[in-house]
Length: 72
Image (tube, rainbow, N blue to C red; front, side, top):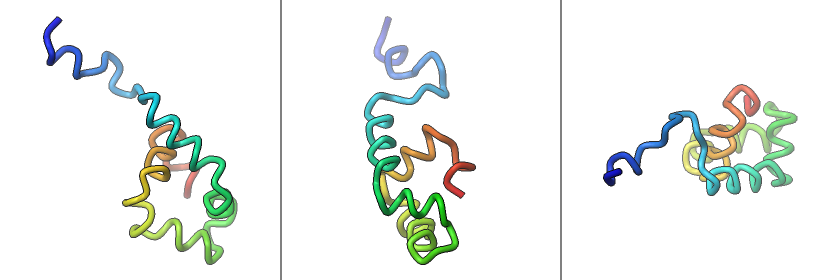
């Protein structure tokens, strides 16, 4: 097995352990919980804003693990 085969996961939908940890942090974050429950609240609008949603590693990991439909 060469390096190229190791770099590519067998399942392209597989999520790494570190991504799951970051998603768990987001799942238990008080601000993120409010944003997911009430996306039209002030906190929800701030956290769904592209400045946060595109740059927060926890938020993007949560979207990868749980899907974007759960965050909108």
